[in-house]
Image (cartoon, rainbow, N blue to C red; front, side, top):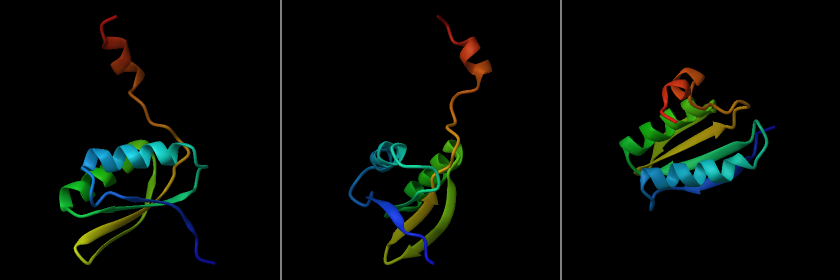
Length: 93
């Protein structure tokens, strides 16, 4: 059985930040393990999406370059990564 992608974010007409923001917002309400696809059309956006996924605890399932765009499929992770408590402790009140 092939897993079903539950969410697709077409970031080809968005800035990289816009694609990641939309992906994060829409993925946040879905259960752990959900597959999401994001489409971007340049290498820097691809790198940023992969770095964001790693920071947030999501797993890259596939990363394909085809027809002038990248298709990245990720599985939503179960952990929510935030700033380490040591960083928060140094922040001014």
